[in-house]
Amino acid sequence: MEFDKIDVPDEGEPIEVIDEEADEFEVPETPIIPILHGDGIGTDVGPAAQQVLEAAANATGRDIAWMRVYAGETAREMYDENLPDDTVNAIEEFRVAIKGPLTTPVGAGFRSLNVALRQKLDFYANVRPTYHLDGVPSPVSEPEQMDMVTFRENTEDVYAGIEWEEGTDEVEQVREFVEDEMGFDETIHSGPVGIGVKPITEYGSKRLIRRAIDYALEHDRDSVTLVHKGNIMKFTEGQFRDWGYEVAREEYGDEVITEDTLWEERDGQQPDDAVVVNDRIADNMLQQVLTRTDEYDVLATMNLNGDYISDACGAQIGGLGIAPGANFGDARCLAEPVHGSAPKYAGQDKVNPTAMILSGVLMFDYMGWGDAAQLVKDAVEETISSKQVTYDLERQIEGGDKLATSEFAEAVVENIEQLA
Ligand code: NAP
Image (cartoon, rainbow, N blue to C red):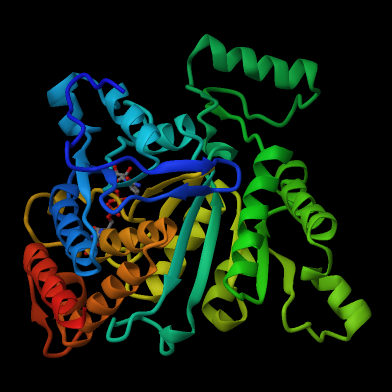
């Protein structure tokens, strides 16, 4: 493939797909991996994560041929556009990539580049694991109880971008249609209005929920919880729940059991190797993650609920500086931290790169580099538990040693070399 302004590294090889639908591929010893450092603090955490991940690859007998790609501010300078084809094509071609945060203006201005990337390349599942690392301070008394993985649908819901601005002809046309044709004549207040559409499809819901159940089965998890606000939004969020139960009942045989069947037929006794599928209303779920943390394992959510819940879970295990994530499609992975570009800290060599480093752990796991993934995790844990931390954790730890972003990355690399 030809790229306009970026070069494919000579020394690496592409990851080769064997079966796209079955998520099967072959990873060479030195894969080409596109990396996008991102906006704001992306310029700090991007290089730090790159250094740590490369050290772990080297320590396990491999290498990475990084291919720098650009979006947001850096792309505007280089290409005069926000999301150049070069970037989308490189991530599409090389299958596995990692990115830092990208800034999205609130209200007016361009639409989210993150959402555009996820939609363009059909990264339909945003996976956000939240687990506690030894030594990380937390606002709750037993943070080790938190061990959940949120599977957030990534392409639909109110995030789909189908919305109309107040004062436009389009929004007035939609208002007229809703009032006159659909009969909601006294529902929208008169005067200026903005209107958005919330599509939730069977296709989008079921493939996300399948992915969550498959993960629970593969990783020996006890339950998958469908999170929704279906009591109010019956035909979107309620339908998501119903499609989830359909998948659970029709596609997995004895491996998956629904919560009502568990009580009706088995007096609440869960078979050892089965996954239970249950559901919770989203507002209740936000308190359940705090009050009954250890009762939940894997959450399957629509786009907006997943965004909120995963941040709330992240707060319990050390905050956004720690929380990793990755987007998955068929035989495709784009790792990215949960946090944004925190512009006020940009370029200060201050923030915590752990979230982006641990996003790389998800990427390594997906590539079948489990040993390198474990090494990174252990080295991060070792660094933090010896109280060598960035500002966000140092302010909560007595006697903590406050490190810059780059110093923290170096400390993790030293631990990788010692633990390897
Ligand atoms: P944010 O950038 O995540 O920052 C919010 C706060 O979280 C920071 O002020 C800081 O808290 C803490 N934080 C975030 N990352 C941290 C890190 N690596 N280390 C330590 N602390 C960290 O959220 P935002 O201010 O709402 O959003 C800023 C921009 O990012 C917006 O343009 C938004 O659209 C974008 N965004 C992008 C993505 C993405 O690219 N996937 C995701 C979310 C938001 P303290 O100041 O309290 O220390």
